[in-house]
Length: 497
Length: 97
Image (cartoon, rainbow over all chains, first blue to last red; front, side):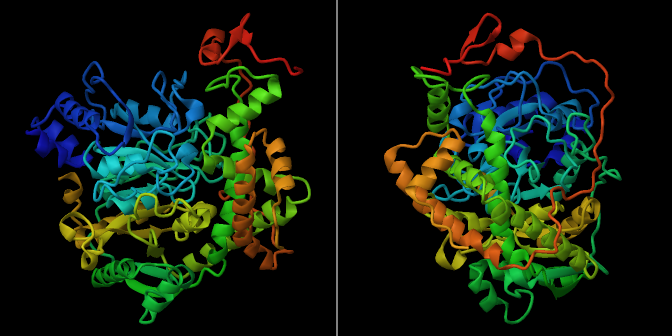
């Protein structure tokens, strides 16, 4: 099989090709390794220099190699979380999610670039430079798992691990035209993930299609004695097979879409900052779902418009606490010539953290400081309760909530860096699900911007459709996403050309 | 709830966060934090008095592990990534200059 044929295989197809004797695990690893080593998109912060010794044998993933977001600790391999303060850090142990996948036969191919400590929606906050979107190199891949998303979209890796705190798997998946799944909070162990906001952080797959997302997830989940918040998933994750959506009830939340399921949607969506082309692709996907037998109705999540505000209290508060560990004592960088201990702490943290991380540490420290705790953190946790209740009420009437994943297609490098809140607003549709801890998947549902000549050959840039379900509904969610994916027939090959 | 973060407040919070800021960064931080807090202030408009806070979204009760001794990281491994080491320990500058 030629390298260009190999690059077009999904991970599940690669497993089948290996089983059928048409491809060896070593050939596959080398094809991916060579492509990742020649990376022009700045996706990778580290690439394996050779295939792992010994054949994968009958391990279920058959040696199909995996790209891993830099914030997962990988023993002996640089794990820098996109930060200068961890430059060259090589952890003494491997994160549980990565270790489980290695044991299942997915060897480590590369570490991928990301926004520093996963704080960002464009990958421009990496200390190791921005990642370029493979559909248009003048645009961002999204973030914070931007390196993982771009690597999979560009065919540098068959599949990748990312993490999602407020949209960091789903949004880059949408902007790069691939599939990204944020599982139920607790489904995957957080042990060995360099923490951002612990009550929200969750690992998940970034893949070429829904079947690969199910396959990768099936080998990641499970309780871990090393993460007390990890949960025993109540069922096996199965390969999705649904062809129809008969009887499936989809709910379009008015507050996140402007009522885009209905006739007046375009106007309402515009008020929320959703691009017209994104709404067109979203509405076309809903029509396709109806053709497959689904019903679409409007639902209300009354507190969803407050989710972003609550999130930007809770996540920075948790980050300010988690990032206290970076003090120049046990690992990472330290400034030279410190006058005393306090001087060493404060200057090491100034020099080691980038501007966005400093901003969030300051915001979180402020929100948690004496006199402000109740007004910010206390209130935000109560908003979170209301958001959880909103979803519970909505899921009494519909099976899934659907929204565009991101209000825009991939934007230009540097376009939003001057205004923090404008950047934060990218997460408008993804943050509510994070606060509620529920699973949500983004699948590509079309291209937008062809009228303006965007994207390769002027054909447009990818739009993501987000589908969210109740806690532990991953199997049903994957089935619905699979049926829709087959009907939509999105072609992502232009990102690999 | 309109919070205006001034220079003094930024310096106070930076001290709490053990984060040095250069002079020009203090002013930029003050205006950026004020702008972000303006958006966040929206949650002040909600009536939330009778709402319980959510700390954890999926119900888990405190789980205790078995109290069994296990090996920990060997000392040399724990020290291997430290910027400075002396006599089998982490070396730091004196707390008092």
